[in-house]
Length: 309
Ligand code: NDP
Image (tube, rainbow, N blue to C red; front, side):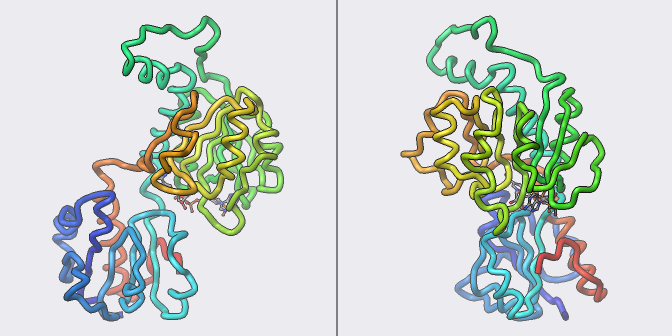
């Protein structure tokens, strides 16, 4: 591919201003610009950096998504058009790991309740047996990729014992036992925290359902930082209402933004964050490093890193 130009789609502004990425790509040996739909016609000598998918991108020579999750991109269309698609897997482990550690500590130390009480100027101490410490508790991390790695490192650092789930049952440092998805119910049964860090695929859609919540302890929490569709959200609401589980921290939802009418907004022991668990002021630098690497590889005729299609 004779890559001459790189365009940055405005949609990246969900994560950072497009101009900041252009500044970071200053040393890239090709023209870089913000994509202007009204004047720009994409061609195979141009690459696109984007958050959203647009059909017009199929006319370009390469598309890079600034997210790890590319479930909204039609892989078959990319294959048919021979347009390579790369993603940003690998840059989120630290931020997501810290976010998950934050949820875990909030539940154990009741921090989310204090914040809620503070808004009402309500000086309410927890009951004597409400707060606890996480040392020696067990977490089950479903998905042991780059997110999973960052989560395992933080949770073991806090003294938790960690088991994991992925299709490839090879050992993973810091993870006491690796289960396959067939043994999901057994894997979650002993865990105080079940942390979901898998991509949304045909196999993971709805993989955490009523049966999974029934297999969890009633004092266990589910944490979802993967994709909303991995959880059967109606079954989650029922499990929370019926006290099958103790609570949930959710960064991702079946429908985003979470609709006003969702009961999840108002539930005790539910933390809702607006799909920002990976946000960090360094996000843009990390994307720039990946894009830079692939620009060099394209120019050298080498294989792309993080190639999905
Ligand atoms: P990776 O590709 O590095 O890891 C994915 C992991 O999931 C691997 O361990 C993989 O192992 C496992 N996996 C895949 N399919 C299954 C399955 N059917 N059952 C069990 N495990 C499975 O991806 P990342 O860790 O970088 O990201 C994971 C997902 O998290 C992304 O696709 C994205 O949707 C989401 N994400 C969310 C963010 C947020 O802001 N909340 C930020 C970044 C990512 P194996 O192949 O052996 O099964």
